[in-house]
Every structure is written in structure tokens, then in C-alpha cells.
Image (cartoon, rainbow, N blue to C red; front, side, top):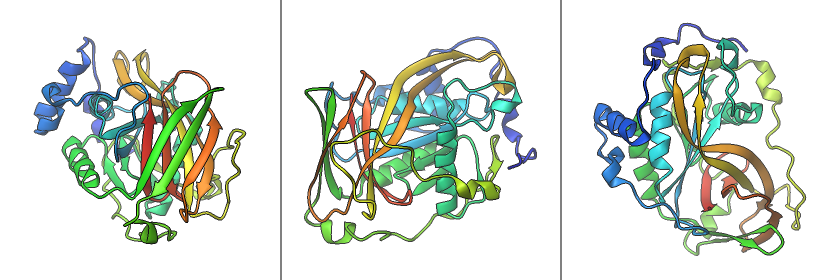
Length: 313
């Protein structure tokens, strides 16, 4: 894989010195983008401990501490982390580590997940900051207004699955899912949505061309021991994500050298824990250690559409 050096137009976004609090920076981004939804006064209340929001939209931000174009998208994540109608997850990728700063949260597995989305949607490159919404819409992460519009559009769609998660005695997580009556006959069909988004114009810092080696990336990480064995032929997979709610990093090298950056909802693990054919209700219990928040996602096999997501704080 080779980097396209011509796509470094975002270097002017590099922060130099000084600090601003997260709400001040959110307001600045909102005014710059004309997005009223980002003004702090419009923030929605965060979920109460253990609560699960009804039909939230799942947003994945692919970002990197070494990407000069990423700070506006990272600031957007701070606002989204406070909303209960969105589950926003930041996946830090590793392909910008070489330019002088190794991302302290990056994992190769998140780069590989981003590559699988690119292949499914017919894209030849991946880039940062990149947003994927419900597994189907791919947007440039610094285009905050477009991201907010896409969230609203996805949230307006009717829920197809009732998904509930709760902690159980012994350190486990119980996952219960049931297709809603009106959606069940359609939802149970694998690969039912074949319309793919057009490739985006990737004129941003952080573009990585994908070579032949990318085709050998496995689809999932190794699941932990489970009490319910999945059916490998099922058209939907159940995934468990853990994340760190907030962190601050002093970046000492690379394109963002000198920046003290704040990050929200940083993914620390992402694994497949089961599968589902949706012919009937699903109920499984999986191990759940530690106090980090958990997110359960039901996604079309082959990293397709995300049809349900639930968060446990």
C-alpha cells in the first residue's frame, strides 16, 4: 500500500499552541459549519446508567492523532457523545503513525475494518477523517453539516429490530433481540440492500491506497468464549464493542505537534460474539469484564448495514 502524497490539502488545520475547552471548540466548529445542532445548548441528555436508547444511529469515525484534518471531526465526537439518539464510536487507525507520531489509541484491526467498508462500497482508498453511518453511508468526517443531516435521515427510518442489553450476575452481558413484526419478513433476507454509495472525493489528509494485500484481511476478530454458539451461515452478526468515554493526549510529533487533543468514545475492542438468522428471537449471554461502556451491534454479514445498536453505560 502506498500513500497518495498529493492529498495533503488539510495541513493548514494544524493546531499551534493554546487550549480551548471542548464546548468552546464545539461552538467554534458549529459556527464555522453553520450547524445549529452543534451549539452546546442543544445537547441532549446522556443515557442514565444501564439505560438503552430506542433505535439509536450508529456512527463510526475513523480518525488519527497524526491527521491534520481530523480535529474538527474529533470535536464533533465530543458533542455526539452527549446524545442519546446516536452511538458515536471513534476508531483510531494506524496508517499515519509513520509521519512522526504513533497514535496512542490506534489498532491495525480498525484500519482493517475501514478497508472492508471500502471494498464493500467499491472504493479504492480509505482516508481520515472518515465517517460511516449505520454501515451504509460514508462521509468525509470534517463535513459536519452533512454528517448531521445523515444522522437525522437514518434516525427517521423505522426501527426493524428491538435490541436490549443488560448486565447479569457473574460479570456477563445478556443480549436479547427480536425482529419487529412489520420488518421481519424483509429483514430476514441476507444482503437485501444492494444499493451502494458513490465513492467520495477524498481530497483530505489521510488517504491510503489499498493494494492487493488488503484482500487477505480477515472479516472478524476472534470472539471470546460464549455461552451460546453462533450459526456461521446466519445473515447477521452480533458484535460487542467496548470504549473509553474520554481521554486527553498531548501530541508531541507529526502534523498536530503541540496540540493537546481531547477525544471521546475511543474504541478499545471490537469483536463478534454471535450470529442470527432473525427467524425468531435471539438471546445470548457473553462475558463482560471491567467498567468500560459496552455497545452491542447487529450488522449484516460481510460488514453491511447495521440494523440495530444498543449501548450499556
